[in-house]
Length: 297
Image 1 (cartoon, rainbow, N blue to C red):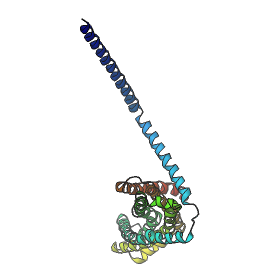
Image 2: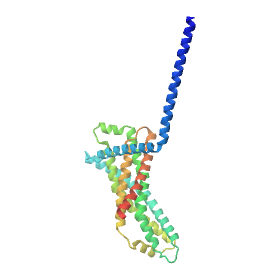
Image 3: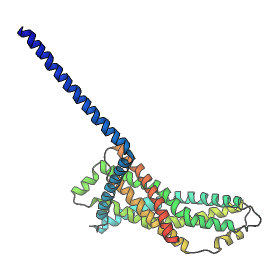
Image 4: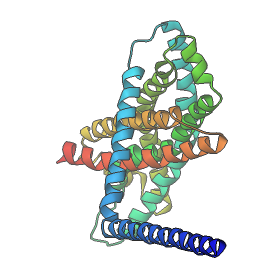
C-alpha cells in the first residue's frame, strides 16, 4: 500500500514537473514570438540605428587615429626617408597607369563627341572644346582619383593590414614609436603632393589622345587647337587641383585607417583592402558632388 502511494505521489510529482516545463516552454516561446514581432515591426529603424552606431564608432576611431597621425615626428631623418619611399611607391609607380588610361579615354571622348556633332551647322572646333572641358573638369580629377583608390588605396590597406596581423605595429609601439605617425603620415603627404601632379599629367596626355581621336574623325589640327583655346578659363585647373587634394587625403587616410585596425588573418587583410577601395570610392563621389556645388555654384 505504501509502495502504491509512493508510486502515485512520484507519478504526480513528475506530472507537475512536466507541466511546469511545458509552461516554461510556452512562456519562452511567447517571449520569442513577441520579440520576433517587435523586430519585424521595427526592423528598418533598428537596422538604421545599428548602422548609425557603427558609423559613429568608426568616425571616433578615425579621428582618434588622425590625432596621432598629425603629431610631430620624433626623428625627421627617419620621416624623410619614409616620405621618399612613399613618393616612389604612390607617385612614380602610378605614372604608367595614369598615362595609358588618360590617353585612350581622351581619344574615346574626342571620337564620341565628333560622332554626336555631325550636324553641319555646328562648328567642328566644339570637339576640342568639349574634350577639354570633359577632361579638365571631371575625368582627370575624379576618374583618376577612383582609379588611384583602387591601385594606391588597396596597396596602403593591405600593407598596413599585413603589418598589423604580423604584430609589426605592436613592436613599433613597444619600442616607444608613434606607429600611426610613422606609417601613415608619409603616405598622406606623398598622396597630397603627387596626386595633383598626376592629374595635371592626365590632362596633358588626355589632350594628346583627344587630338589623335579628332584626326581620325577628320578634324584638322587647327580646328581642334582652336577649340582647346576657345574661352578657356584657367580656374578650371585650379578647381580640379582643389578636388584632387581632398581626394588624395581621403584615399590615403581612409585606406590607412582600415588597414591599421585590421583584425584576424590573411582573409581580414583582403577584406580591409576591398573595404578601402569601396569606402574611398563612395566618399570621393559624395565629396565630388559637394565640392562641385560649393566651388562652381
